[in-house]
Image (tube, rainbow, N blue to C red; front, side):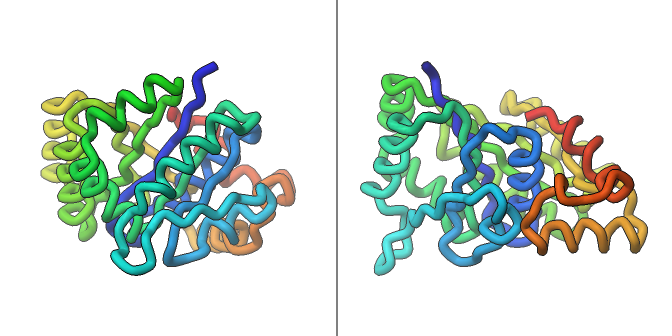
Amino acid sequence: MTKKIHFITQAKGGSGKSVLAFMLAEKYQHAAVLDLDDATTTTMKQLAYRKPVKVSFLDPLTKRIDRGAFNGLFESVIEANKELFIADLGASVAEQLPKYFALNGIEVISEILLTNQIALQITCVVGGGNIFKATMEYLEELVWATQGFLEITVALNGFYPCSPEQETLLFSYCSQHNLRLINFDLVKDKGEIALRTVENVLKDGKGISALGPFAAIYFKKPIEELNL
């Protein structure tokens, strides 16, 4: 039985990793949720009702991904009675991920995952506007480090709309490197009431099932349309 893990990653803080993790966890209620953020507790709070498993990846001295901890995660996945895992990588862990792949040999890592029937999908969040440059630079580093051995999906956060020029650059890059591109936006209505509702739900950590039917409208369609 193949186990699938979504690594949600981006070194630029505030780009929307935890929001995407929230949406995936809501869509796939049967999945195990992992919080791989060594710096903040955003996912632990937003998805408290799903009881996320906290996993520390960084060596406290070097601040690099600890090889033993990384291997230990996948060993735990093999043993777990789950088929789908959603992992939110914090900015500090995400920053080290391409370096880890490059230093430890992406071919070796890919072979180990394949042998143990683990499908690792790396989902890199990008955004337009003033975060476009930083998020794209990280995506480029990730693509270079993985060398086509791992599946990378680019998730464009609709909260940060791209300019026409940015959109052209992104589409061209994804096409050139055969990267799948999806869009996500937790709430398309950017009115004050809708945004406040979203903020409160994320803060409460109870998920959308605790909402009334009208408040839940803000969330249900974007989550259902999420194609990841």
